[in-house]
Amino acid sequence: MKKTLLLTMALTSAMALGGCGQTREDRAVNGALLGGAAGALIGGAATGRAGGALAGGLIGAAAGGVIGANSEPARRCVRIRYDYDGNRYCARYARY
Image 1 (cartoon, rainbow, N blue to C red):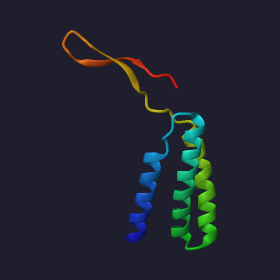
Image 2 (image 1 turned 45 degrees about the vertical axis):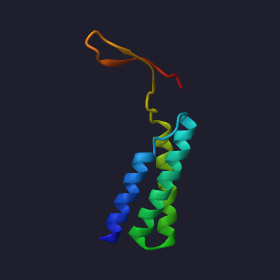
Image 3 (image 1 turned 90 degrees about the horizontal axis):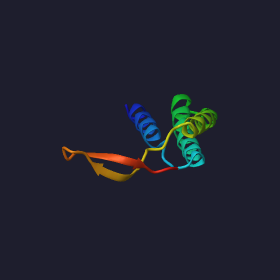
């Protein structure tokens, strides 16, 4: 039960934080770091050996770097306007 909970938490945190960063390079580095950490945890828990943790870390870092580099940053609104009914909408987004 502890292994399952640990693996679930590692995967959830890696997926939640993998796309953080404004530039493509930042997102690639963050994805590689989080993917490597999650892969090492999963590889170590699955095999019980250091070799499994190392292989999982390498595979996770490669996959996390690729996924992070190809993700899109969250768009940030820089100009808010109101329509005739008083509803807010974004008139212009920030350029990255």
